[in-house]
Amino acid sequence: MDVLTDSLRSLELKTEVYGRLELSAPWGLKLDLGHPGFFHAVSRGSCWLEVEGQRIALATGDWVFILGNAPHLLRDSPRTRTQPLPGIYEAQGARCGGVLRHGGDGPRTTLISFSFGFAGTWLDRLLAGLPRVLHIKADGMGSTRWVESIIQLVASEMEAGRPGHEIVATRLADVLFIHALRAHVEAFPAEKGGWLRALEDPQLGRVLQQLHERPRHPWTVESMAKLASMSRSTFAERFQKVIGESPLTYLTGWRMHTASRLMANPDASLTTIAEAVGYETDSAFGKAFKRHVGKTPGEYRRQLRPPPGGPQ
Image (cartoon, rainbow, N blue to C red; front, side):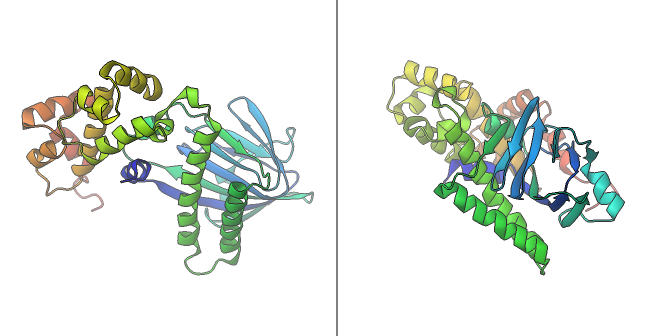
């Protein structure tokens, strides 16, 4: 099992193609949409991005990955006034996910934009320690050429508008999301740590994989340290330093996250779920779940049901 794949699957990654934006100067966009992540690629031309106090110049072939619900501005010049992007779509009667043309009669810029959404409770660990903005410049390297090829394919799919183009673009956006996460790890100093960095650590990565594969196993710090071929104290200290929490706290978090996913199945009993995540009794599981989630398993499960008369 690939731990990153398993975690992304558990987060129920929802990629949305926000649009192919054909922009002519002067133009300015404001995005404050509450999505956990945004990806913007410059297919043609150039522009300025302003986010969290940073002003970044983007050129053809560049792409930027923004995490954490950060409002941001995109415009042809730092002096150009901005408009909320949803309002521009509404004013034109355009549809999110298609081609939007906006601006004046100056130099043209083409942006390909995606938003990312998540369900589940594992997002904070996934993003812990990562910079909120990653800017990758077009430098002719193999990885950037590969990303540029995907971006151009997405752009052509959206321009042609053939049947099924939205699902094609969305699947390609999933690939770009994973590549962007990898690029975050590669660009981030190793000493900063973080969950994604730990996946690449031969010793910690081995432990994380086993914890994810076998949450019902009666893990102890000693058994984890043995798996990592480290002493108990050294392992516990390194785990805390890299991931930012103790091994047992991490294990409990993953067990509760897994239990939350299993509760979506109405046929799974609480006893079965408790056993699947390593608890011998419903009582012990219930106490741990409420301590971690803030609700009893029964309360949590009831909130998953649609309200009477609501959508089924």
